[in-house]
Image 1: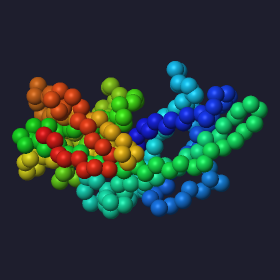
Image 2: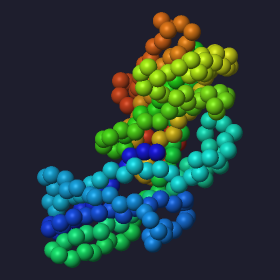
Image 3: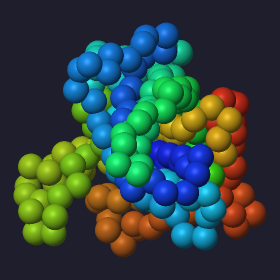
Image 4: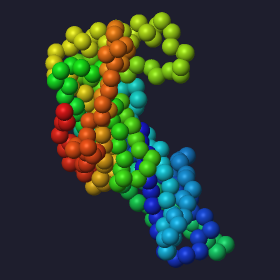
Length: 238
């Protein structure tokens, strides 16, 4: 799941309202607009002429969320590393309503890895933005060879963690300590093919037997986020 910014430039000034109709499909599948689909109002951006209208979409890849998995990332990784976003604009202008043609964007996933050679960290998170626009996206990174049920512990409000969560967290820390080194964390960032993604990784040591050893740090490239063009392979960091 990730935020995607959509822009549309009015062919001429004077639109009263623009609504983006959009949906997602697997690669190679056409959309069915007669079924229910998402709509989002596009807002004009200041200082643009003719006006550019923009909106943010919360994209959920059209894959089953209950698909059996054999590792940290989904099976059939090639098929589930891409999908399509279809969209068109409904324009209200000068008392009439008209629509644009459908546009299609291919979304792809890039895998980012972090190698913890010392086995020091228990958690890793991937943080990225597309083309530098806000808001940013975040995704937990999975640890190779750690059972799926222990990959991503629940994050609960303050004072709601009970003994059950505490035991699960300490068991997770013990399992991680027993894994062979280096510990390889993997995560996926999503975006349109050809778009630039700026990303960084935050690694931390949490919920260990000794709370005084807990710490974290950002993994950057010379103090700046890493950059990748969606559709190109991402090499491991760390």
